[in-house]
Length: 99
Image (tube, rainbow, N blue to C red; front, side, top):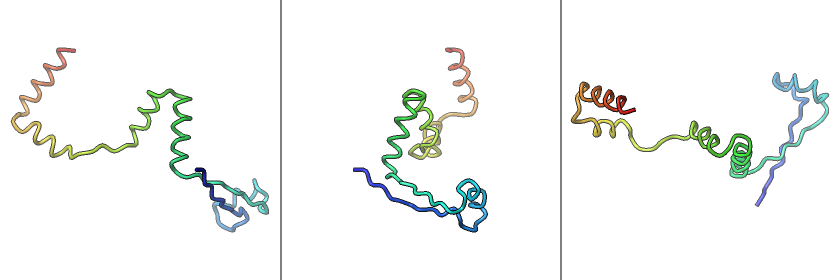
């Protein structure tokens, strides 16, 4: 279901932001924008990104903007509760040697 909302913007406003646009649009024209629901915009954006950069890179790109879940501070305390700093360093060095 596509719903659009028409928004009219008059570029002949006296605001500073529209001053530069007045020259482009000659100040007497009105621009009508049709907005789409956010879900439709998101869907279109995913399709465009996937088409242009591939699904793998699209996922990597989107993951930059998503927040994780859980409480890492609490999980870290529980995960490393029985380890000393020396234990942690030894574990890191051991893992790096396996690579």
